[in-house]
Image 1 (tube, rainbow, N blue to C red):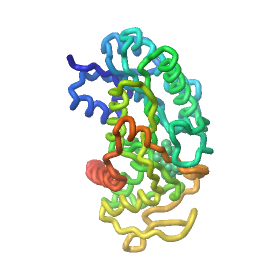
Image 2: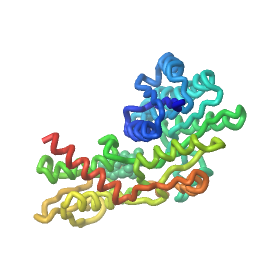
Image 3: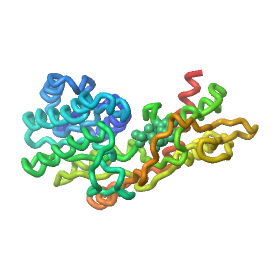
Image 4: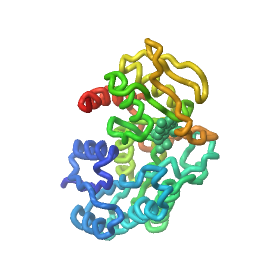
Length: 316
Ligand code: GDP
């Protein structure tokens, strides 16, 4: 019998990679495309799919919009996953449930790298809702023997990443500069660092989490951070664009061979720099799941740069 998986957020980046993986593994996949705020839609989806495994990827993921509307964020990022879990349990008491949690649940005071026991202290409504969902799933696991897990994801990127995230903004804008469609890439903190992994690898971890004998929570990260500046430098290399950095702080720029400014800083895009870099300690996932990120940072940047060069050509 084919395993049945219900995936929310199936139309997003992560949904794309998870569906691809589960399809290769022979699952029958049910994609939830409705509004997660609609309880009846959740009930109907569970009745129809009668899932063995549920992957909750759907969420309001823009931190700024999440914080502007905390009530709606709580509904979608906290109440909906718990509704989904409870309905899934009613339909199948042995259901296995994995929540896409986030590094945003942690306090900025934790030194890097952060492990599963780092101190909680979200700084935005997105993180608050993700933390509450994770804690309720853990409570049901510990108190009611539910197979409920959370994958605590650090930043994960791919050619399907939304264009407002810095990685996609860099690869798409550089590709457009190469094709003469725009002249400059404007960024915020060039020294901001992130632990960037490949979304496809992270979805493999999520699947592995549900194949264990015991449910648990795991940090999924690469454990290595790179700066925004590094990302730009490597993306430019893969696009065969020669750039050279000069200046500092707000005045830092990157120039091309002809001395024209192709990258500059817009102080309006600055965010407060983190006291400690956002880097995850993936030791538990490596040890218990036998998971490790397969895609290197360079390969991730290359994949995104190459895809965006093809994509930008279609926009000309
Ligand atoms: P998230 O903030 O971790 O969810 O992901 P983003 O991709 O939006 O941002 C990653 C990092 O890049 C943050 O530390 C930002 O401060 C930094 N950054 C620098 N310039 C930009 C920019 O122009 N846009 C965005 N989105 N982030 C930028």
